[in-house]
Image (cartoon, rainbow over all chains, first blue to last red):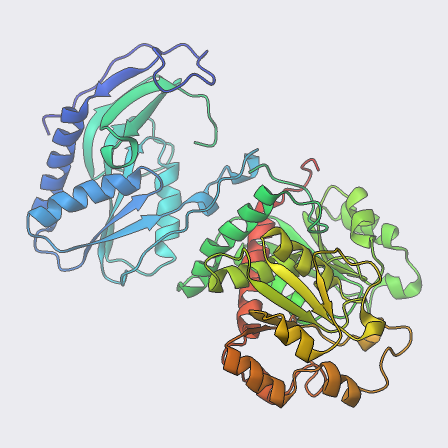
Length: 204
Length: 308
């Protein structure tokens, strides 16, 4: 994939606690055109792999995996595929839930189709340590027995702590661990963008 | 939302905390429709039920809730425990503290016992009913059940019928429903009506006046002979005739399309009849199902060792 390239960036200062999103400590990795190019390429790759599949589902992981799955879904439908859409809330499966000082409100997962024997693409905007992928997979399997599960990531970031692979990936990056990769989607945030900021919020 | 250590009553909850618990109960209820009705939220945690009063549904509701959150559930059987040998509540709690349980669900005939236990343990304590004082998870499940039926609770009317004086359910449930904007009225024999009632709560002594108030929901309380020192009415038959939901009154509430609730277990032939139990707008079974979801939501929110 020609959007696959490594970004070699210095660590950002860690002093950005409480700094609003427009902070100068942010650095853009993809603009709107770049995000849409990645979405097109991922959708095309999914299409090539699964165009003959009868039960194909895209399941977004809360929160931004949901608009990510919807953006891919719209492209696949435009190519003539029939797909199911679902949502996964992984809060209950987080391995760090007990250390939270603020509990998230539950969104609730929505899998309103028959999961058995379906091919499911779990959509997560950034796959990094893969702890989210692990949690999402466990939650998903509570709904039934899919024939196959694959993972799509808009950003595939190096640094796995668990043995998961992004089967479909847009941008591939390798960044210092102080950096946090964040994604905005037009449907949720008003614009499409991938940027790097500093970590300051443990629950996010 | 910041986690809290204990749930002891409704009065100490903020509006935001009530909203948080009710909102999260929805996703927990959705879980019941799945093939795997279980999430790992409390994996490795232990939940102990400490019931000094008999209970079937509240206790099993908590046990099912805790199991669905993957907690280990331990029932502390009072009948066969040292309590009958004279061990005090605090000695028992000290023993439980050494066992490192994370959550203690307690029911006791004496008001304030859960507070006392909560002050003496790191574990999260949930009041599952103490004397005439409070039954907060019942109140939360009642509110959740009504929110499923009413788009907006504000202005809707609930008539609570029965032994108000001895009922922790009446206390906790009327408090939460009023905080959510409902209008509450009591229908009770004079001997069972508490002396001090908030001014906003209308009081009725007979069904005709109470129904003229035009309630949307009729909430029957259980007649609790075990919590009375002396009988407050001459006979079950007379209570039924004057204050029970007789067959004739079932027909009236059916005609008006009112919702019917009861915290269970019911005394058939006293506060309700077989016809009342089969009433199509009865929410009694939904209260039971929702009770599990709401208790899961409470367990999710509480955190052993948290402040407050």
